[in-house]
Amino acid sequence: MLQLIDELKTIPGVVGACIYGSDEGVLATNLPSIFRPQRLETVGKHLGKLYSAGQMSFDDLTDVSLHYDESVVVARELRKNQLIFAICDPTFNHNLLTMSFNLLQEELEQGRFAEAETPVAEAADGPGAAGALPCDQPAEELQELLGEMREKLGKVLGPMAGFIFDEAAEAWQKQGRCAISTIEALINLLNQEIADETKAETYRKLIAPALRAFQER
Amino acid sequence: MATAKEFVLRVSKIDGVAGCLLVRDDGVLLGQTLDDPEVFSSLVVLSGSLGQDIMARTGFSYCRHLSYLRRGKRHFYVFPIENYLLGVVQRSDSYVPDMLDAVYRLISRVSTRSSAVAAGGS
Image 1 (cartoon, rainbow over the protein chains, first blue to last red):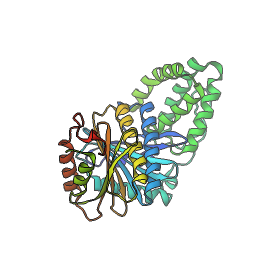
Image 2 (cartoon, rainbow over the protein chains, first blue to last red):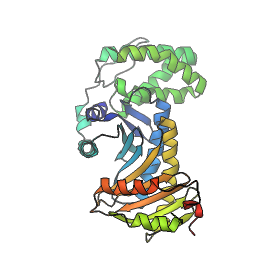
Image 3 (cartoon, chains in turn green, blue):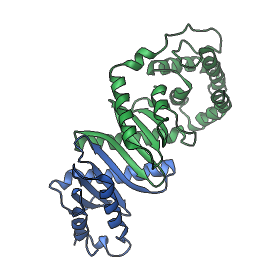
């Protein structure tokens, strides 16, 4: 899924994009970190409502776009309950983005992305093991990061953390491609398990250096 | 611009506009040149509200308009004008940039702080 939005980012004027599922939350994003995950969740939810309302009025609706002074947000339903939105400069090429959305939708419908996924790797042992994940990042590097995230979760949730992390990682795996760009989806799943805003914030602070280090590699 | 209805009529006369409606942000319809304004007025109010909220969440400064883009090219636009919302249906054969410019020009001439549109559909 990340590949999809990374390709969109190459379009002049496109700042980044996000795939949002109404059940899963943020599934993938390559937007700058200034767009914090909690905000993207709300934006995704609102765009979903706008899109649904639009569909009730127009049976041939394709995109919803919101034009602000400094940015334009363009949203498209990829498949049921799943939305992609791009944030762009006002000078972006709308036709090019529309065409890319069309291609992306077509590829999803034909299932090319599922085929492109790497085979499931063997699960590693020990506390650093995050289970078998079809990663498009080098498996070892990502598993190293996941191991660190797993360890930090222990500081917030105590002895059950390992078990909870493995379950969340498995659910994350089922959502699609596991990569750094979809890590927010895993964090969201963990936040649901933490079920405490302050603790979730603490956890985010604890893992921030590891995430940053991974992204800077 | 003396009344909401006059404003709506002027927007409707813009080249490329198939019809329009003006609603207050509480949903009260002030004027329209569309056959089925009830269908659109709820959408307009919801769009205005969610558009503003997205603006607040993302830190963007001002919502110029929202577009519902349709395969049949009869796109639908929502323009927030302070406490009012203007919904515009585009003709499928219109040149969008010119139409949008003309709508913006007209909106810029409306002062909602005065009694202009606030005259409330009189």
